[in-house]
Image 1 (cartoon, rainbow, N blue to C red):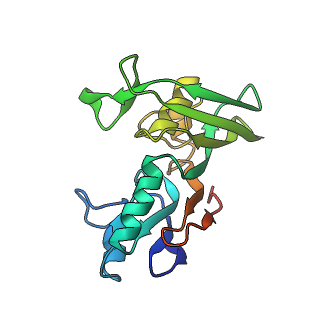
Image 2: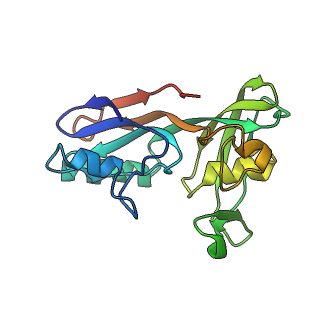
Amino acid sequence: MQILYQDKHLIVVNKPSGLLSQPGSIIDSVHTRLQSQFGFVGLIHRLDQATSGVMVLALTPFALSNIAKQFQDRLTFKVYEARVFGRLPASKGHVDLPLRCDWPNRPRQEVHSEGRQSLTHWRLLQIEDNCSRVELIPHTGRSHQLRVHMSAMGFPMVGDYFYAPPKALNLSPRLHLHAKTLRIKHPMTGQPLTFQCKAPF
């Protein structure tokens, strides 16, 4: 796990695919690894276990409260990169479909009229054989939002064991979804901070 930035108030890491954000049935996680080095580590947001990329954690209770409120109030800016199966038909667009938990198959999520409003903006970066490399900007932060929205469009993510058919799943042993950019304000100074990490696929 690579440390991208660190000061007395926060730490930013590049989470590898396959590592949990916080401990669950498996103890090993971003949170537990950092807790072994620091006295206080506050979990602010999460990335799916299969997703890699930029993740910020707080090193003081004040920083935890401040940055968590930025996420809650949608004052942060997040950009993801993904490879999806199929050739996207346009250079950009958006997906506005409500999502809810698919309870019989949890943690899977599903598009449903009774779900919570969910919005994703996308921009085509490159066509690669039968796949498209795409930039994704979530306006909302629902569980599995980007994965479900792209699948609902008919362009499932490469290596997505929850939502991809065998053709897309078998193209890679890992999910091709990476949190490549995160912008927040420093909890003490209010200065804008932008963290970036290139997609490893």
